[in-house]
Length: 335
Image (cartoon, rainbow, N blue to C red; front, side, top):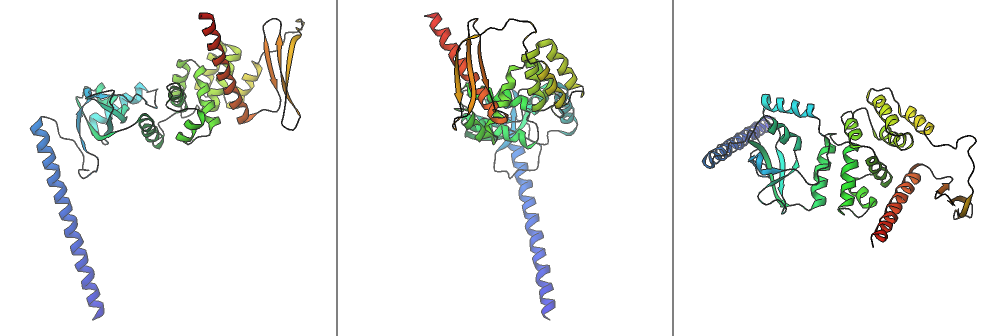
């Protein structure tokens, strides 16, 4: 008897669950019809999708009312992938809404948080409207960057080449105080951030071409190409860039090429003695290196035992120091 009572209770529970599910489906259907009717009244096409109970308001907005994220983490967009996405939108419709918000700098406009590629693809096929999630809260600049950055990271759309440009811009605009603050925000080591930003010394065309092959070309390739460019010049770097893009240049080969391009003193050239020298020591008193000043205007810094991440951090700080010193000189010259 107890077994029959248990079975009856289970069946009754299942019946109640089915009724509840049917009620929710009916409620969603009514809500969707209401939204479509409301959209028809104001002359805006209804959105396509089944998530009518989402917490974030979702509707169709005019593409002309959208503007790109001023802190967009991406710089490089492949025309081929945009065309492919446009064809997909034509056949399957828009499966995922873009995400937009408001910024006081763009009154009456929706700023794209996530979905720049979808907007570009929709524009290319002449669409007037696009499905969007409306995030009405006013995002500050850091939050606007990080939301877009993390969305790209989740789908592996962000490359070190995009990062190089975006991170440099964020520091130049004072959005982040320094490398350490930026590194903490993007959850990367400061040495990694430094190394990525150094890629900005490469021509934009180099970065763009490598970004299109980011599935096989990474930071190590790009950084060694930077060294080759600095030491061997544009023609040599162009050759190695082509080798990289065609898959014939391993990181090891690039390291060897960069070392081969390092400047050496020509045989038989006259040795010029330094006028003064500053020596550096480690905390334990051991030798670290020296700074030599020559009569012909050269200044040479030579350090020993500084490698890996410490070497990259030192290089970046030296770069900042020299750039600051150069600006001071230019300011004195203009007075």
